[in-house]
Length: 213
Image (cartoon, rainbow, N blue to C red; front, side, top):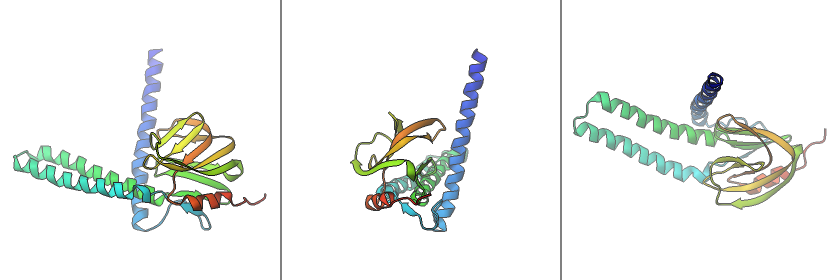
C-alpha cells in the first residue's frame, strides 16, 4: 500500500511541477504580448473587462522595492568581501524575483476577463481561466466585497477570483460547471464572484441578451 501511495504522491508532485513550469512559460509569453501592446484571448467584438488598474500601484511599489533591495544587497555583499560564488546565486534569485513580478503584471494586464455573445471568461493572469456559457448564467449583480481571503478560492460551490481582497461582480449559474484550480485540482461551482476595474461595463455586457440558436 505504501508503495502505491508513494507513486501517487510523486505523480501529484510532478503534475504540480509541470503546472508551475507552465505558469512561468506563459508568464514570459505574456511579457512579450505586453511589449507588443496586445491582449490574449480577446476576439473581435468581445468586451474585455480589465482588473490590472486596482493592483497596478501596489505592483509598482513592490517592483521598486525589489530593485532597490537587489542593488543594495549586492553592494553590501561586495563591500564586506563576499565572494562572487555566493553573490552570484543571490543576485540570480533577486533578478528572478524581478522577472516574476514583471511577468505577473504582464499576465494580468494582457489576460482580462472577457464577455462574448456565448461565454464569460473569468481569468487571473495565467493561473486560472474559467469559461462560463452565457446560457447558464441565471443572475448577475453588483456585489462589492472588500474582505476576500485570497486571490483564488473555491468553497461551498462558489469560485472567488479576487484582486486586492476585492470582488464586485457576482453571478449565479443554472447548473454546476467544473473549474480547475491553479495547482490542478478540480471542483464544481454554481456561483462566481470576481473583480473588474469596470463593473458597469461588466453588468451591461452580461445583461445583453445572448443570441438565439
